Amino acid sequence: RSYSMLSRVRPKQALPAGTAAPVVAELDAHRFDDLYLAMQLKFRGSSDEVTAKSARYLPLLLNNDGLARGETFLDIGCGRGEWLALLKSKNIACRGIDLSEAMVAEARARGFDVAAADAVAYLKAQPDASLGGISAFHVVEHIPFFDLVDLIDEIRRVLKPRSSVERTRAKVRRSPRS
Image 1: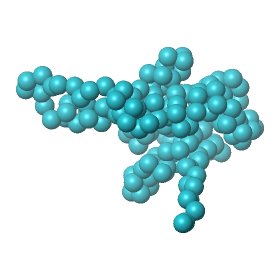
Image 2: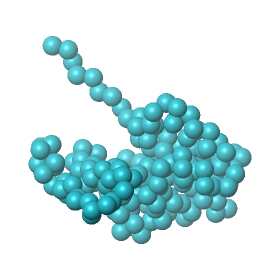
Image 3: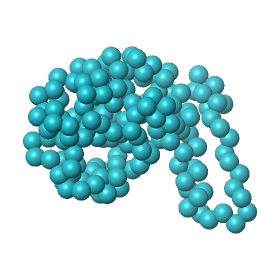
């Protein structure tokens, strides 16, 4: 199954003569975006399935006075935009960021305000106390420890007082030993 998904990944792009090394790094950083999108669909579920699973977190936000007043909620690692869809359904102003250009394209196609960005870099560009809430579902397990410390510091800086932070982590299933 993994091989068939790999075969759908776009081939590595040839670089024009004289192209600088940072362009190579940028191309390499996104060459598996389509594979990741296919894996999300296969193993995590359709957008409708993920939206239904995510709905359990909405009650945590519905009593947030800042969000009720229109403060913006940021979804870090927004993927295809399932959580953004739920936030919008409750009239919560929101936007998302994701490293995957394929995920950003999917979320934008659904009409969401989404940017392709590194979380720490994006937050560093935001003013102090500028966000009413932040979520980072299934993000923490992908971040090296010291980068995670930077991310938490930036989250604390940009959140307004008494704002919400929602996060989950991947569940690890252990195989029975034989």
